Image (cartoon, helix red, strand yellow):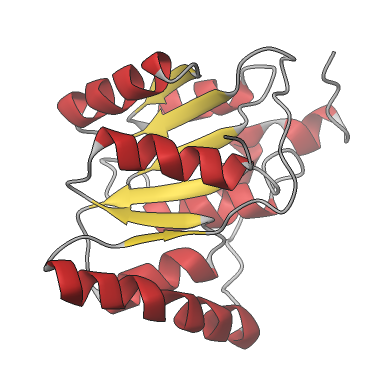
Length: 189
């Protein structure tokens, strides 16, 4: 059984929406800049697609003891449906959210998710701030987050990685590449 560490007020994700987000350090920005070099080369070669994924050093076991649970945070219902379907076929369980209240409810639901994929362009939440808050949260700080977005500017990629993203994928992407990326950040085959 999964038992999170910390007090109830530390665990409650709602309180984290009121906190200031720490700006990435110069070291984090430099590391993110280095990580983008390979991904940005693929953008130039293919004309549109960026895929940067940091493979987990060790496999991350599912918190439920069964299947890995992935939270998809995306305002595009069609994209969410495609991602959820690909994950279900690949043997993952999913949760979805698009708006702040849904995101908070999904993050507060126990057991916590094993991975998050999120668009940074959300209707009532600033995506990079949410990413920074997840990275600072006692439960979610080690949960891999893959940013899935149509934003392709170099600065957007660097910012997402500096705020703690384990991966960055530009839309549109193939469902197979999406599943492969999640397996990589979880360290599973």
